[in-house]
Length: 559
Image 1 (tube, rainbow, N blue to C red):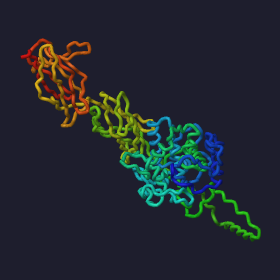
Image 2 (cartoon, helix red, strand yellow; image 1 turned 180 degrees about the vertical axis):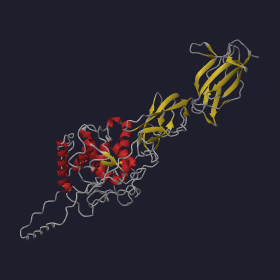
Image 3 (cartoon, rainbow, N blue to C red; image 1 turned 60 degrees about the horizontal axis):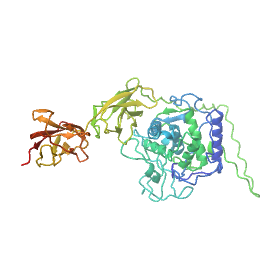
Image 4 (cartoon, rainbow, N blue to C red; image 1 turned 90 degrees about the horizontal axis):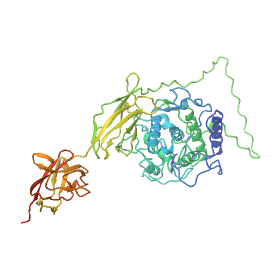
């Protein structure tokens, strides 16, 4: 279980021994080397803990099943096998999509972590048997909550209720919740909304997988470094047996895996949140199927009678045929990505795009393919971002094959950029969409005062000119403004005499550009000076968006 999930169900040395055997077998088959003891070799291997931090799952129970000793693939071949092969190598489609989406999201926001999706799969296998074999709805939410044991100090940590029973239904003690087994207090800190439904739900595999990924990457860990990897796994459950078990599944999935339909994943046989007392509620067998050693008889004890040998089968009894798992139908894959009706992508600087990029994934026959991970990427010289602040977003398509990107938010930089949609882990041609950011606009601009603006020849105008811009009645912030001393009401070209501004060298300047309104939509013009010409002159102020106002400036000799 994850940071403060629940204490382990069993702490015997048997689990460590079996895990070590599995690790040794994987190593013998040329799998990458694993150190079952983690990065702290000086500590006890069996039942040892990491006392300097809490765990994500509260060190609650977990499934101790180990992967088959014959790995699903050979070194150097694909890690995404078709829907065949060892049943244990099959990962339910929605669960697998959630792990890969979390990997892509974290690779974008925290590339230094180097989180592999196979680590999430290994923890998901140990914590909940891949969400009970993929028993989730189309949105990735489990059909019923997955709850760990009550953390009341009996065999596990003693954690008093922190969520008033909101997640685990227990108002006295906490319990680990969901396919990644977060305790409520840890979920309150690390919970995510990965499927963009407005909720952070520990029972949703997309939310839980991303939360687990971010938790494992905490403290600037680089999971490509063995010591950081061990520390991350031990932070989820402070048990060396747990570490060895997760590492064995990690290497197993790295050697090969394939996608299976939801609800058909292999269920764990050992104890854990899925089977608190084993498959039938009885005490669970020793991991790996080996029998526990018989207790040593005490002096004076009468030996138990030997059990009767089983009767040999009758000659007429036909041998039972070996049972084979039913064949699985390969899940459809996306062969083509198409625009699903995305409209014109345009927004003013600092505003939101009204349209959202939408694509549809199809197979070779043109049928919709659901539960495919689609990546949306902002490309180009722009400061536009998706809602949430990133330039990359991964979305899982619905059953209709439709994937919709998060809302786009324009920055201050104007111009065009590209939003690129592609299928994660598939060589499918990407679809590009052009988006445009235009200048902020105003549909009205007015002078804020009505005092007459006058100056003597060769003097400075005593009063400044201030205007306010609005757009649809709202304050127009950051709107570009142009101020020009024009020749006449019918001729908007710059005047060659009369009032003027001054440039940095003190020379007359009768047209100003590059001005912008402030956060209140207000612009105060620089000082205005008069030359020797007398009369009434016109100052025209024009905003991006076409709003205009004309102001009179009078130059007259003193009375």
